[in-house]
Image (cartoon, rainbow, N blue to C red; front, side, top):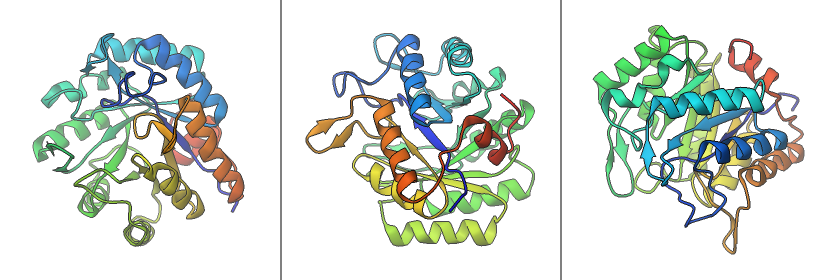
Length: 276
């Protein structure tokens, strides 16, 4: 299979702390350094959250602005994807960074259960976030935790409510949401091929499911995500030493399945993004 595989690195997230794994990058400088290494290992998308210096979550647009500026300086051409996830803020604060015009932004189009709470994405908030992305010409990465999210995203795209090319990510292995299930994964891929044949898709697995879903996605011709946001370990006995180590592991799977790792330029072409 000659189709390049896009590797996305989810560098920080809102949950893991440095007490869980000291490699989790928290400050802007730590995030940039970790991103540089991940790009060298094969990442072409940096999926970014921001934190306060004490590690607490935030959606502060000023921090996103600083991070974006530093990533453009030190990782030229890399695709910058900001998170609008609900663990870092509420309501309109979740989209406060969108006027910065990142290349991409995550978008959850429906609600679901998380380990200890409901991950709420109300229809009016979803509509507002998608309208802001259209306004600022930002391609969303749909974070699908359920089949209904995939089908809803396909409808939204057909109705012109999502900017750019449709890009859907299957998220598998979150407790109380969609488990890591091969039959379900295969059905998701089937739905994308039949109902959105011009779209691109990727997949992410949480915790020990990361390496499993990485291989499923690479072997099936999709793209995939790795990084310390989703998984802090290499295996049961070893913490991951860096984001780069997790991306390098995914790149090795690309080699195993004879998939070239996409460069940032190739990834931009595949996703229909403006030049970096």
